[in-house]
Amino acid sequence: MPEKIIDPVSVPSVLSAPETLLPELDFDALSQSLGGLEGRLDKKPKTAAIILAGGTGERFGHEGGKQLVEIAGRPILTWSAEAFDAVGDVGLIVIVAPEDRQEEYLKRAIDPFPFVTPVVLAPAGAIRQESAFSGLEYVPDDFEYVVLHDGARPLVSPDLILHTINTLKGNIDCDGAVVGHPSVDTLKVVEDGVIVGTPDRSCFWNAQTPQVFRAGIYRRAHASALSDGFVGTDDSALIERLGGRVLMVEGKRDNIKLTVPEDYYMLAAAVRAMAMNNPLG
Image (spheres, one colour):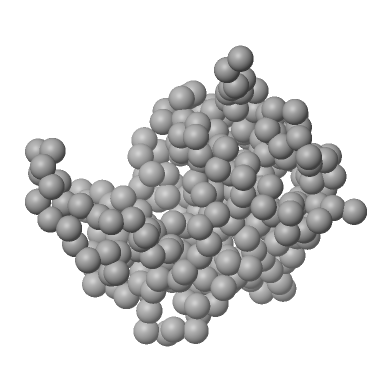
């Protein structure tokens, strides 16, 4: 018989059904083990986090489907938010979500969990850049740094977030720091379906999130982009076009973004590896 395929959108808790994917794991225990991040809040935090959760989920195959898909009993969005809650220097978490789903996101991904850091919701825009700007408007001026993160990257760690923030703080001549990793695939330049070049991949990196910026220049970058009608593919591009200096921080390859259904199984494999590295019991 052909292997049974489970759709993680229509069955969002597929990972809690051991017989379907990871039969040797106790997912109740796994949920407790991997969900044990402890919220922290410094007396004078300097960083605000903006978690972008406003996508339609079109490439994932279901409108609005991916943010509440569960891994080990917790929604994707919860995993992301908990990682920032565990960083003491993060004093505010702004979750950017579609207005018509904000109540649902709170009810399922935020309210059931013991967050220490204040969490507020901002309305999503039509595109990522508009959503980031919307979230920025909810950040008070007394925060010196802003960290942007894709809500659909649930395996980001508090250590990586803090390391990226501290990397920027430790380089006063820089305006931002972006997590990524070196490209390992051969890159081709293609025109009309024909390869016209093979660039040296040694200078290419795959950019991810979190991305951390000094709040002042990040605000100016958004204002300039809006004035000029510029749309970037990530937040760093807005600062780069103003001549800002942005550092690259090497992250882990398991910082996967859930974009298409196949990514769900890559996340499952990463969770399995986490469990194996942190034996239960």
